[in-house]
Image 1 (tube, one colour):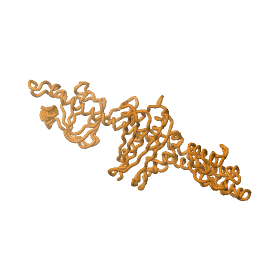
Image 2 (image 1 turned 120 degrees about the horizontal axis):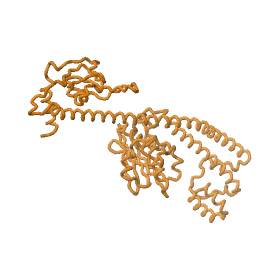
Image 3 (image 1 turned 90 degrees about the vertical axis):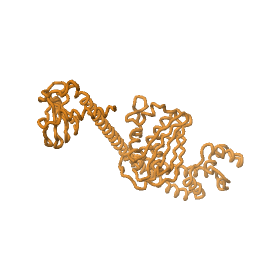
Image 4 (image 1 turned 135 degrees about the vertical axis):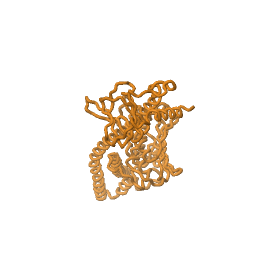
Length: 445
């Protein structure tokens, strides 16, 4: 016979035999104290109706805590009755109007020749009750641990937010000065060149408008062509290759090629200064986001935009990394840009750390839309993560950093998981010798 069925039958027989007499049954009002910790008790109580709570008081700290609840069909007074201390170990207070029945130390066993002594009859039932109480206590402990983890995450967010807000405030002033002074300098330079060397103004404007777009390898290849075609010295050919990366070179360049290249370089430097100030402003905006100034959800958020902001924020980490971004056209979602930036920053920062000793590090980010879900895959070619580590990466405070200490803009993968789950999404990690991939799915609705 099934153990649970046997237990229910034993419990039903005990209730009918020992807890159904009127003289050992009474009602208590909500708020009434049934047992007082440390006072005499020789009764084992059964809750026939209602709910009561047990409280434990520590005289040394003068603190009182709720330690368990008993509902209909549950027992209390177990310790004092079976240990025969005849002293209540907790204070029991009724949460609602309740009906109680009891046995005490004078109660005699019924049919002991068939069912054994009173202790033998009650032991299976009470052990089951204690096991259930232990299970409930364990579940409550898990809930408390979950609450503590959320509190810890919130504290991390607050600390990072304060730090980010301070950094953003300081940088914002410097970036503002850089941006405004660059524009002032450009206007003044244009005017000066127009007055003193009007013939060179076009080269200055070309440098400001276009800058240098060619890579080092492209410049070397183009310089070789110019060297052969125009009989230039090596340095001049190289500079001209930067200014005119393809096609025919107009005759105006050769009227005074040194002057032409000099003014083009001035324009290129102004172009780079403009780009730098805009890039710095973008980083400041991203840092402000981590400051938590705008946690509200936006109804028309583009996930691709949050990825671009994350890449801007981690530009210094990505200098040696080949970033491959393959964004799809995605429907807008209702989400917080701040939270999603935090998700991508964590994963990308971890990927950069993992690829620290890789000769040719590569980060690949792919976005797609499938079955009413946005899918973001972030892969890196760092070393494989073993199975034991994969099982732990989403646990709070888990780190593979030496000494457990690492400063960065990441907040930990446990917080990444919490943010993703808060949107009803999922996050999965796969890793092998070729690549490590995080896949995040976010629902549209």
